[in-house]
Length: 185
Image (cartoon, rainbow, N blue to C red; front, side, top):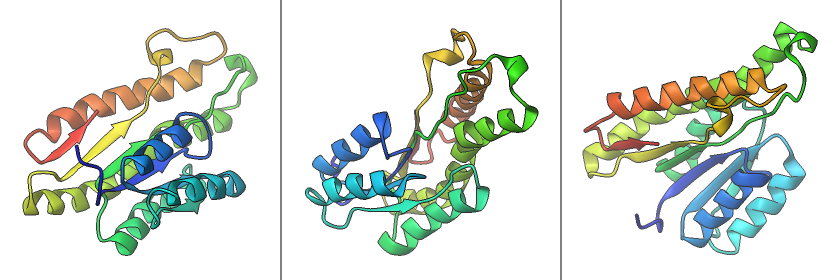
């Protein structure tokens, strides 16, 4: 794929896999919209991305909030006229035994690790379908999961459940989007 003239949204871009992904996409020529909760770290990431693609930027916010997740996609499309790549990478671990976690804490992990992926994907698909009508490349959705969905680490039950949900969602998207010009992995 030629990444020049592509717009990529990378969630969880303030550190780790998200940060490396944002920088790699920018180096390849994509305009990156980096997002996460930590504004100061996002400023560093977007500044580094702008060295390669001057229009790259960041939007700080909590992806566990449905309206922010949806607005992220809408603001990207409003600013750049398109969204070509969506990297759903935002995640938080739990590192505690299940019996020490409240249902509300478990729900917070599910909102960030899985539901944010669902919300951004549902917001991006209509735009990618329209783009696909104009050419054969509607878009790419990458959902970053974890081996923890298969082999659950001790004290990571909720994290593993969130990644298992993401895996099922991704497999379903792959089937449902076949032939649409949108690819999901």
